[in-house]
Length: 132
View 1 (cartoon, rainbow, N blue to C red):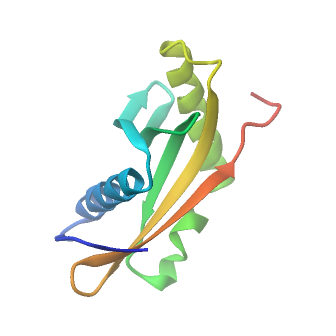
View 2: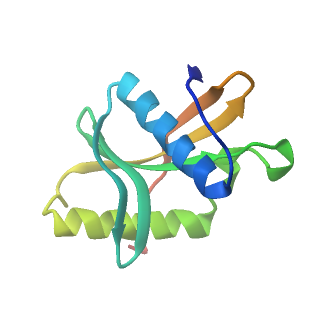
């Protein structure tokens, strides 16, 4: 999906913040309710925590400007997935929500000409395995 909006990409941090803002707006358009953004605990950070239907969704946002970096969805490695899972389980425990259905989604954001972006949502991108 193509999203319109202003952005300045002076640094990698600016790009990341802009991508998260685009992703947040996109998710809201898709019916998600944003619960938290940039949630941190002792295990790390999750970009967006949202509710979509019966699921609490832990959303990793990846923004890339160049093809040589690979597609943004490819940047969520197994190591990164395990870290996100730890943060998510910590959040659910702290909030007494361990009985809720959870899902791990990834949003890819690629800036385009004219202050727009190509946005792609991958729902249920990975799952908690037996080691947790």
